[in-house]
Structure formats: C-alpha cells, structure tokens
Length: 565
Image 1 (cartoon, rainbow, N blue to C red):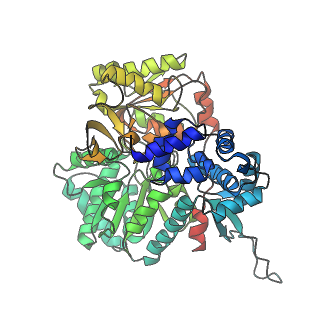
Image 2 (image 1 turned 135 degrees about the horizontal axis):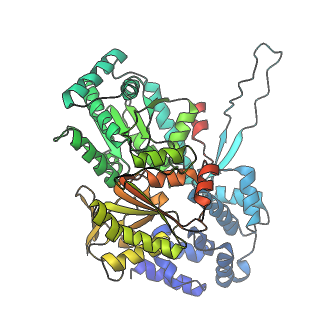
Image 3 (image 1 turned 60 degrees about the vertical axis):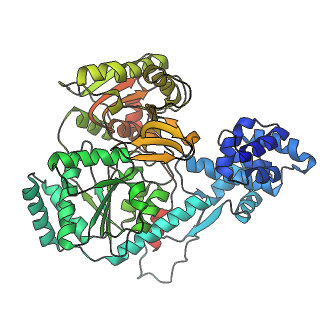
C-alpha cells in the first residue's frame, strides 16, 4: 500500500468511513488527498458511490459542531455533486435555475449561495450565451427589439472549458475555408482511386468525398454495416490528400476500432497505403502535420476527446467526423456530432450504404423504430428469449464459449458481450465474473484476462511488472498501464463502454427491468460486423422501448458556441 493511500485510510478511519475508499480517493484527489480530505470531508462526494447523507455523517464526526448545513465547503460540494451526476449522464452543463433547484433538493439551505460557493472555489464555472435563433424578426417593423436575456449554464470546469475550447477550435478550422481541391478535380481523383484500387464507389460516396475536399468541417453520415464503404472512402481520401500534398490522418476512437478499419482497408488493398491509428496514438503526436484529418466512429467522442483532436489540427486543415447518427451519444459528456450538424456551421454529407445483409436489416429496422424478424440463412442474426436475468447470463456465456465458435468458427476472443446493465445477474460485472471462471480462472487480474483500460482500449493482460500492467491491444501494440487498479475485465461491457468498438460477433444482452431506448439497442447491434445474437429477457419491453424512446436527451452548449462565433 502506498504512503498516500495509507494517509487517506487514516483520515477515513477517523471520520468513520470505509478505508477501502482510499485508493479511489487518491486517484481522484491527487497526491495531497489526505490533507485535502482532512480539511474538507465533503470531498467524499467526489466518489459516485458516496451519498450526501454519508458525507454529512463523516463531516459531523470529523468536524463536530463546525459541520454546519450552510458550511461553504458543503454548499460547494453539493453543487459540484449535482454537476458530476449530470456529467455522468452525458450533460455538459446545467441551466442555472435548474441547478439551484437540484442543489436545494439535496439539502442546501440557500441554493444560490451554494452555487456561488462552488463558483468561488472553482468547482463550477458559469457560461452565458446570447445565441438568438429567432427567425421571425422583421427589420421593417418599427423599433429595435430588446436583446433576450442570456442563457446561463453552469458546468464542471474541465467539461465546460473543453466544450468551449472545442467550439473555438472548430470555428478556427471553419474560418480557413480553403478547398483542398476543386470539385471537378476531386471527383476525378475519386474515380481514379476506384480504378487504381479496383473497387466501385457509389454516387453518394463520390459526392460526399467531393464535399470533404471542398469544406473545412464535414459530418460524414454513415449507416449500419458501412465499414466496407468507409474503407473505400479512406482509400479515395488518401489519393485526394496525396495529389494535393496535404497528407491524411485517419483515427478511430480505440485501438480495436482502428484495427477493424485497417483490416477492412487491407481486404481491398493487400499492402494498404493508409495507416489507421487509435485517437490516443494520433493526438499523442500533436500538433498534427496533415491537412486532412478523419475521425471514424465519431459518435463515441465526447467534448474533451473532440477538443483534443480539433486542437491538434493545423490551420487550414479539413476535419471529417464520420459517424452514424442513429447511435447513442458518447459515454463521456457531450453530443458532438449531433451538435455540429445542428449548428449549421458544418456541411453534412452522406456516405453510401454498406452491403445488404441480416445484421444491417435488423439495425436499419431498429433505427426506424421497430425490431423486425429478419431472415438469416447463415445465422448472421439469432434471437434468444430468456425468462430471467440468470438465464440471459447463462445464454450469453454459452453463446460466446460454445455456440458461436462451433457454428460460425468465430473464436471467443473475437466475440463480445454487450449488456444494457452494469449491475445485476446479467450486468457486466457478474457476466465478467462468469467468463473469468470459465475462460481464465483465477483471482483478481491474471495474464490472459480480457481487459479494458481507462481510455476505453480493449486487449489482453500479458503481465504485471514494476512499471504496471502490460496490455496487448488489438493490432498487436502493447501499452503499459501504470495503475493496474484502473483496469476492468472486458469479456462483457455495458453499451457505453462498447461505443466505438467493432467485433465479428456480438452478443447483446437485455436483462429484465432495463430501460430500453432505440439508440442504445441500435448501438449495441451495430458493434457486430458478421454476427449478432440478441438475448432478450425484457418480457416485451424491447419492442416498445425501441418504438417509443427514440432519443437520449442531453443538455449541451456546443451549438450556441458555434453559432455565436
């Protein structure tokens, strides 16, 4: 146990809190965690598993009569607690009046004072927007209309500033506005690439790539099973970048997604001239030196990730966000692709459709609000009914370890369970325990375990040494994770953690009593490139959820930032 963890454990013991919280507190609060916690017990609320009541109890035990309901430390902690919970649900900001209401519901005697306390302690930041989208103003009418009151939103400093920086960096790129090629030359280059590499390009894809050559910021829409068409587009963009001498960078959100696209490109060209990289690897070399930058699976990018990429792009670069808008928004705060398209500051182009097939047909049906029965002569789609969470878990393990390898010759390491829950008998935690026992028995983490890093990359644990945990990622690259405690088992992952990943086979698990939404189900299904098994234990709510819950609403500010710029 490190000295910092020991010191925090001692503070926790004095305030009556479980010492087991110490490692996580050190990770969240940093090297001075013990001193900070000793001074401010309400910092316990930085951990999502700690309730306000528990933090108040520890504060009273630690501070005695000084632990008052109106203590500025408590007020600030309640406000930042609300903002962190909102960020965990994907919101980047909370409207000021709503924030005050929510803080009051947690027990703040003076909600405005609580918000001010958080702002003074730099645990919350205020953003004001005067974006006026009223198109009904008639300049011929007498007088000048009054300016509307600004919208006021509070955010966690890191999230709020990241969204602001993202908007500013995108505006910088939009301001360049110089084409890489003229439209005629770009179209001819696409045709040349198709002839050179020996494939056909749909008219929609050709038009979309011409738009990429002309416009500095493009949302490149794609549909389910569009990986082959995206691979063709990447090769065409390579030739556009080569002929215009601007260079091309292609990134995917994870090493696994990068390897999947690289394999798709290699199927077209055995020795591909394009290298697809993980976003972490690409931005690790910032600033970039290429004039055409493509982010695939862009729906998985939150504001922090997108801001990092946009900031790395040089002046005059063209940025392409290739995304399937029917997917759920990112696991982290923001809805970048949707906001960029909604702002009308970027151009939106449509990639051609991928090859027809049962997986695509099922996903397209879900996107339209239904769960169709599809013909699957090659067992590309299998629906499995389960009467309980326990049966759903049993079916998932059976499919991955036996049925899919035997019937489809897809090895377990190339198949993924995606579950709609983190907890419960069919949640990610219990499923991973079952897979651990079945595939690689042991305690804790062992060599050979399938793991996911804090950055979302998935791979296999190879060893733990003095430097940390060595994880082999998809594609063969190895990374060392300095804090092995940040790893999680990944034979089964929740939908949010699967975002951006692609696997030959995916088993989608929908346990009972699970809120079902269309984007959630669609995202899970479209993680599969060859086969999907849908294990349904919802008792009929799958169909109604897909039909009625069409969107996952989030409060964000990016549209306002872009429009005001």
